[in-house]
Each structure stands twice: as structure tokens, then as C-alpha cells.
Amino acid sequence: MEFNQMLEEKVGHINDILLLYTPDEDGRFKKICEAVSYSVKAGGKRLRPLLLQEIFRLCKGHDKYDETDIHPFMSALELIHTYSLVHDDLPAMDNDLLRRGLPTTHAKFGEDFGILAGDALLNSAYEIMLDKISTSCDMRFARAAKVIADNAGIFGMVGGQCLDVELTGKEINKDDIDFIFRYKTGALLTASLTAGGHLAGADEKVLGLLGDAGNAIGLAFQIRDDILDCIGSEEEIGKPVGSDERNNKTTYVSLYGLEKAKEDVDKYTESAKGSLKQIGENPFLFELIEYMASRTK
Amino acid sequence: MEFNQMLEEKVGHINDILLLYTPDEDGRFKKICEAVSYSVKAGGKRLRPLLLQEIFRLCKGHDKYDETDIHPFMSALELIHTYSLVHDDLPAMDNDLLRRGLPTTHAKFGEDFGILAGDALLNSAYEIMLDKISTSCDMRFARAAKVIADNAGIFGMVGGQCLDVELTGKEINKDDIDFIFRYKTGALLTASLTAGGHLAGADEKVLGLLGDAGNAIGLAFQIRDDILDCIGSEEEIGKPVGSDERNNKTTYVSLYGLEKAKEDVDKYTESAKGSLKQIGENPFLFELIEYMASRTK
Image 1 (cartoon, chains in turn yellow, blue):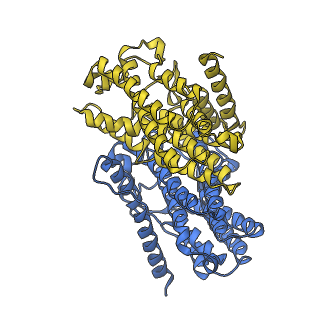
Image 2: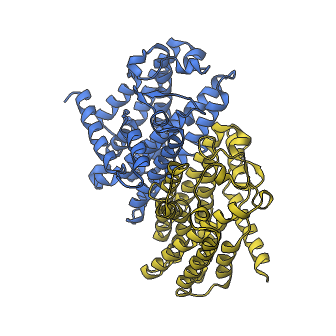
Image 3: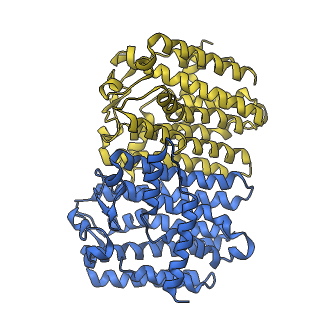
């Protein structure tokens, strides 16, 4: 089967799983359920759950364990990622009214419900993981959740977002941008890999390789994002082009130039594949990592 | 020892525990650490950790287990409560600039850091609990965290807050206000009791009694809050008096009148004590519940 067709099927499957974990209610909680559901269904590449799943397979977790056991953790990653976007889009943050061609959550439901939907999404990630953890004595689940939580917090994604906000409009250097990339985007991507490893019962050596690969994938991904913001068209990426520029942001491209940025995407992508190949084989995973590095949206 | 002196000592101890779980960093994450730390240190009655601890003792948890094991859960409750206040104070929500006589987090650190500090506080509650869960095979911890997560989410505190926001400025009835109280404030207070029970290894019957008592304490607490908003002075409660009225909110007092409100606080307080007395004895806990019902701030 072609990579694109496989990707589409896998993303469809992840969307089905996400639906199971998305609240649905017609009573008093209708509006918050709608805002949460809207935020999740607005789409996205579902890269984090996809990475967790494929890493689980790379580490041969599916030979040893029930693969449905990993669904709560796949969903949690996507819910945390979604909350971060919903809050990033708020007027006090990036003030974006469109994402993936659709009104952002606060644009559709009001700023108060933008804040509350983000809160609900973040909390629900932990409700889902703790439901799994508290009904099983299997420590793999607790370790995966711990890795996800740590990488989503102050010394992870939230911290990276804070630095990004603090430095917007200021003179920033290469160290700054490396730091923001590693935390803002890199942390949760890395957690997708290491949590997948924990769920597969990986040993310390494999977890180390997954951490290295996660860092490299995160950097490649974020540099590619900056490249797309520079060269993409509004139609292609579904949000106003040059929104980074509009907000007066220094990007990887403005610091290093377009050619070096493209070279670095390739360099980090190869490095990630090198680490993962030491663990095992998963042809789809390697194609996925190349796809992430060359994506056009 | 006098109740007030015991309360002060216990709150002091909880503040010490909270300090251990409050991030401190001088490097790149300095500002978010400061915003989080400021929000936590701004004070508060620490009722949720206090309730968890005293319920743990009521259920004789301290005879069977190491009491320091409950510290992560006491802290998590307070961090979740603190995040909810930080987000409630935001301009798009209640738009409060003062709380407990001090500038609110967004007033001091900017609206963006108000949002991000709330996110960081919520996430850190789970980091702390998962750290405990993932380093122990004891399922009590997972069950306590699950109860806290469920009560903090859409079908708990966040849902209650959403209803409160949705109904502000609208004609609301007694059912509405009962619902908002049960979820917005009641859910996390109830979780403080039931999580304490889980940590003490309580059985289903005791957990049921704790749930009943938690609901009653939550109602008494929130009605008392409305009474204070009606009769208190700005100095006494440290926030502008009549802020509910300013925001055009229907309160328990405006619906039922002051006398009935006071009677109901007593009724629910007695009901809570009745449930808890079926479990065991803890004189401080019963005084605490009476203190909550008659507090002046």
C-alpha cells in the first residue's frame, strides 16, 4: 500500500479513537462539550498519537501487549497538543482567528470558552490516562503518563511557550530559538516517542535512543514549520501566511537563511532515523519521519 | 490547644509542603516559575489539602501508612484550586484585579502569563501525582488521583465554571444555582474527601459517606461565600465587595434571602458532620467544618 493511503487510514483510525474520548452531552454541559469536541475535530495531522503507536510497534510492544492499551495515551497526547493550540490562539497570546482554515475555538465560542475548553482538554488528558492507570496494576501506564506530564509542563511545553511569548518582538539569538524549539514543540514530540517506549516495556538504552530521536524530530519539525511560514501560501497551510512575521517573530529562517534551514531539517531527520534504526525496523515510521520533514502544511 | 492555633500550625505545615512542590528557577524559566510561585504563595485557606489530610486521619490512614505519602495529593488539590482562581480572574472571565488584597496573577504578570501560569499549575498537579504513582505499585495513589482528575474536569469543576459563565447576567433559578455550586466548588471539595478516603484504603461504604459529606460541605461553603459577598466588607474578604452583584450574578442570597441562606449553611454542615461521624472521630475535622460554615473571609 502507498504511504499516503496508509497514513490516511491510520489517521482515520486515530480520529475514531479520539471520538471515543471526546465528551458528548446534551444537557447542562452541552456548550463546553461542543467547544472541546470542535477543537479536537478541527483536524490536524495527529502526529503525536501516530508516533507513539509506531514507536510502540518499533519496540515490539504489539507482540507482547494488547495494542488497545495504548489508546488512552495516544488520545492524551493529542488532547494536550490541542489544548496548547487553543490557548496559543487566544487574543492575549497569538490572537489568531483562523486555524486549518476554520475559526479558532475562541473565535467560535468566545474568549471565555476558549480558556475553559483548553483547561478541559488538558484535564481530560489526565482523566483518560488515570482511568487506565487506576484500573490496572501495570506500571508501564504510570511511567508513560509521567513522561507525558513532565514534557507538557513548565520544564517542557508550557515553559517553551512562555519563552516564545517573552521573546516575541525582542532581539533573539540562535541559542534562544534552539531552546524554544526544544521545549515548545520538541518536548511533547519527544514524549510521544519515549511514552511509546515505556508502553512497550523498553529498556533504558532504547529509551535513550528514543529521547535522542525525539529531540531531532522536534527540531526538524519546528524548522520545517518556520520554512513553511516563510514559503507557504495561505491556502496551503490554512492560516494567514507570515503570521510569525506579522507578530514580529525571529524565526529559524530569518536567523540562518532558507538553505541552511532546509539542510538542518535533513540533518536532524537523518539523525532521528539513525537512532531509531538501532532499535528495530518499522518502514512506515521511517517514511512518516521523512514526510514530517518535507510536508507542505 | 485552641482550634485557631492548631489551624494556623496545620496551614503553616501545608505551606511548607507546597513550597517543596513549587518550582524555583533562575534561568530561562524564571518568569513562569515566578508567576506560578506568586499564585501559590498569594495565600488562601488551604482547605482542600487540610480536608484531605484530616479525612485520611479520620479513616485511620495514618495508623496504616506513611503520612508523607499523601503530600503529593494535598499539593495537587491546592494547585488545581489555584489554577482555577488564576483563570477565573482573567479579563475574559471575572476580570478581577485583586484577590486576597493582592494583584491577581494576570494583573501582575500580564494576561498571557495569567493563562500560562494557570496551565502550568494544572499540569504540575498531575506531574506531582504521577511522580508518586509511577514510583510505587500502590493502587491507592492511582485511585486518589483519578478521583481528583474526574472532579476537576468537564463533569466537575470546569463544567461548573462553564455553567457559571454561561448563566451570568441571565435569569437563573434555584436548580441552576444548585447545579453550579455542586460542580464549580463542590466537586473539588468532594474530591478532597474521597481522595483522602482512597489514600487511607477506605471501603465503598466509607467512600459513599465521604461523597455525601463532601457534597454537603461544598454547598455550605458556597452559600457562605454568597453570604459573605452580600454582608462582608472589602477589607474582610480582600476583594471588592459585591463583585458578584457588579457582574450581575444571581446568588443564593438573592434567590432565597439571607435568613434561609444562613439556615441552609447550618443544615448542610450538620448533615456533613452526621455522615462523617459514622466513620469515626476527629475533633479537629469537625471544628474545621464548623469554621468553614461560619468563616468571615
